[in-house]
Length: 338
Image 1 (spheres, one colour):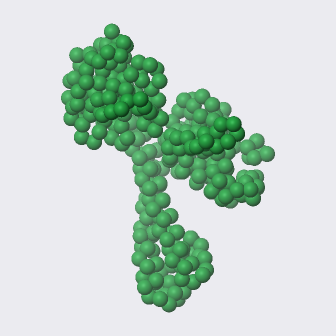
Image 2 (cartoon, one colour):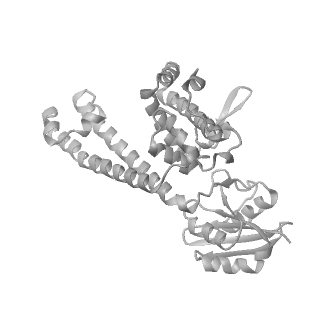
């Protein structure tokens, strides 16, 4: 009889449930996070298990890879899209594992993308780069705020990063304010060095696959952003339509509308936050290099908030990149912004 397994994975243990095609329980057990133990309880049912689905938010590499190496068909649950059965009054890990197995029997399991093991290290290093970039931005904005609050003037990021104690003291008389600014400068410089080192290492370790090279024809998308899109998006053929890709990049609205009225928000977290950041960065840069993109952004800006205009531009770029990758064509601003 065909069987389906669901594994609810936690930091130090996991709950394994196996159901048959009639949804009758075959196995339900909690085990430690040791691959040998998981394989041991699955072994008596190996020949009948059609697929196994793993639900985890952060620590699934070892289990998914181990199960695949053992010959199982493994799926990764899309945790932001999967919903528990809402009519249940009480749920726990056993119910969650059984529900994961049931969704496979019913054919409604929302699946996440399993990045090939050989690409995960570089992808995760690029994610660390993003984390540092975001922290650097927070330090820069904090320093700009302190300066503006004390002097009533603004300062560019480039000028700020060239400051030292003497240059700050020449602009601000209050020593406590000077100290507040000066303490941030070495941290910002250290993060700049770390970002450059990560980029150097990534570019030495990983090369763009041939089908992703055309991404660099988009003004503002260089090698690092191209690699980020490649490693986060994976095979573009897994997206049926351009809207699916734009949605995965979190570049579409998440409104719920009825009778032309907004009735609430959808699942804003469903998608890839790193692709969302990548296209936001591309939208930031393209207005410097492409006149048509700048004109489109300014037109949107005249009717909305800067963040809304920037997201509209990011949506355009995500859609353009989908067609670039699917059809293997170069970027054409006239087709996108006309």
